[in-house]
Image (cartoon, rainbow, N blue to C red; front, side, top):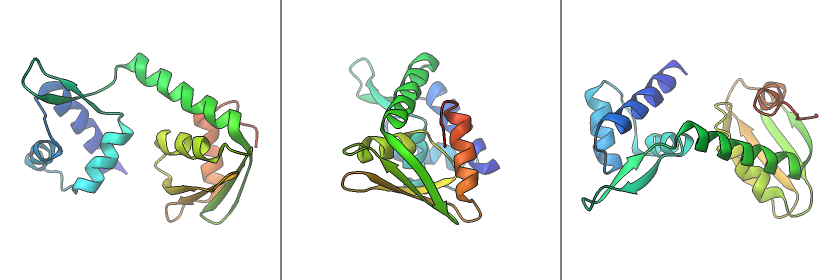
Length: 157
């Protein structure tokens, strides 16, 4: 967990201070700083940090981080989507099932994905009203709910 947090901090610093045009360039910088990271892990890190690409004065595109206000607005939108769509949360071991109102499984699933919870290994949205959440080894459904309550104070489980 500590290495991930240090890596995310390094990614933020590199994007703010260097001209990063591609994941390959970013991987090279991270390796120079001593991080052993795969392209797949870096992709997940970039998604978690909400990194995008912006034009660079006619010289192509470079990675950019959203500002704090923009990041807070996105997080509020995901929280509202979750609260608007979920009905209940239940679990067994490290498997969680979130029941949703009809037609809300995709938006609730997307909200869970974009809240960037380290406890979540992956999610699957059902066709209509169910989201399946697989948690990392050693994380229980109760841990997940407690973490969700930290992110979403209005959550009533």
